[in-house]
Image 1: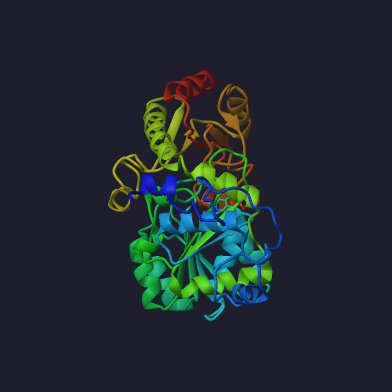
Image 2: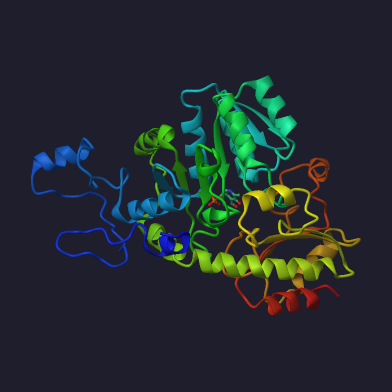
Length: 392
Ligand SMILES: Cc1ncc(COP(=O)(O)O)c(C=O)c1O
């Protein structure tokens, strides 16, 4: 099946007794009953498939895991309570039998950086941060630190830089390190990291996968080497997604292809319009031929599906001017998330990158005049009209 057909069918229609539900229902049971103790014994021993206890598995979230595994092309998946719990599980699984050292992108989502610096580091995991768009820097950091894992994001936040993932995967493989990729911004519709040599893919399902602003969830999809470790860790640590969130995420994914097509196409229109506006100093967009990583983007992404995030800098503006501009928006929602059907705008210096010292933010290119838009599925004309009204 093609990607679009998989989003609608994969994971569904598991036989339960004599009937087969067309779409997977919400199973809320915490534990499961079998006719014979011998069968329960086989289920507990994992010789026979079936749910036994909700921390181990659940039919609703298992269906979602099958669906995501199909979409990412893995050897198994784990649905988690949040994107952050998924990232935690992925890093633990990658490092369990390897040196406790991580080479990480210097432009990771803030909480991922916090996880490395403030939780894993006191437990003995050393992390070094580098610019993953500079392959020499990746090569050098790997040679110098001999890491157990590398962690990168497909599209960085908020400046939307794209590293050459296939080449980074080769460097990781040569060093016997696991490559963990956060694919939240791209989704498997745009890029499938496991096909490019990554070992573990993670998502904040809260974003494009669920897509409607009503789910908190995460997912890990892994290769054969890591999936069993992830499942075993999960059975003990219990970071699992609730069946209700699993149901909503699965329902959301059925329209992922339609939403992404529309959101990517809207993003192209909005980015071109912004680039021509006299109050806009600079636009950051993965579909812009002048983007510093455009050669990598066109090599790795499908044609015209370059992502639906746009960042831009307001000419001569500081924090106050940006705040007033954002308050003038009428339809675009000022909110701290992304990937939903509605267009959302965020001010990175106040939200995602608030914890960085101003000097460090500026060094990363995140200036006080930068805003980030997650483009939704509305009519592009309405998104543009709202920006035009606010850019006075
Ligand atoms: C790229 C990325 N990864 C991970 C996360 C964390 O996901 P969650 O909020 O679902 O824990 C986020 C949240 O914004 C994100 O943007």
